[in-house]
Image 1 (tube, rainbow, N blue to C red):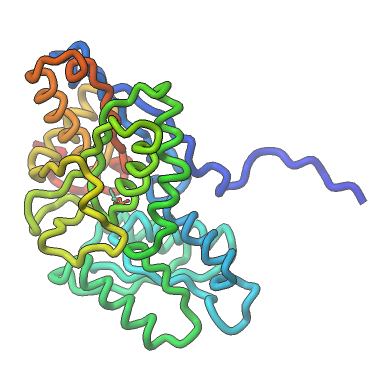
Image 2 (image 1 turned 180 degrees about the vertical axis):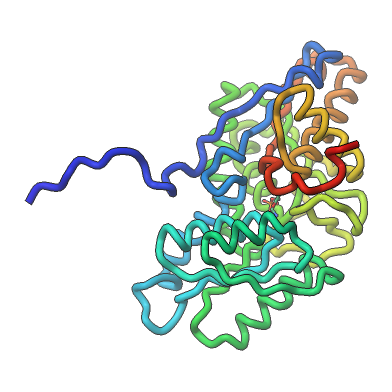
Length: 318
Ligand code: PMP
């Protein structure tokens, strides 16, 4: 029997290979420095977390821990997530046919909850006062009590998370800059994006400076970001890998989100804006340092998601 020719691509095949976008207006005062943003909203689930989630799912399925092949265990994927990883899992569960249960603080934006409901995922709300750590504790509790029905994906401790970026994000950046990248900036949530991308970039060229970004306090409004000094530190996080860590204030990230929308036509979420604000602060320092290498810097950062899920926040109106 012949099979019909298939047209188009599946949803999962569209993960990765995102465009690299030049941000020119915000660096107009620094004509020799380039800031480039990896447009991760172009992933089908709308964020950088499609990469980690799909790698985590592929790893679990390869090890027989998740999916329809087993009638007794791993019928549902379980994890704690502040939003984007959950959306990615929910999309994958719908596309691949497994259930998804997510623990998240009840104050995540209504847009996120609606997206998850649309994909058919189950959401277990935790006390917003406990932040993402409360969601992690709840997921661990369910994993311990839930018998075999769950595969606890544990994005904070799962090596498939950072390996996704080692295998895809970093090689894409290296290729898209013809190996000219000099600096890499990424904020820390689970730290998977920073860890995996940095590990691979350092193999391409140890002279690439890799800068991690964290919010400046535990009480920040940068969704998806962790203030490591006051949080449950992710098991996959190795602070020794960063050449430098920079802190970012929420208000400055909000201001950059507005600038990116109005001056660049790039409508991104707050963690993406925090990354760009950090990259710009770095670019200004380098220009001031005045050495040729510093002035000709090619700084790459991550535009983690689009603004769609944050449009109800007040800061856009300022
Ligand atoms: N930005 C957003 C909007 C996120 O949801 C996340 C994931 N928590 C991150 C950045 C951080 O990415 P990572 O988990 O790879 O550190």
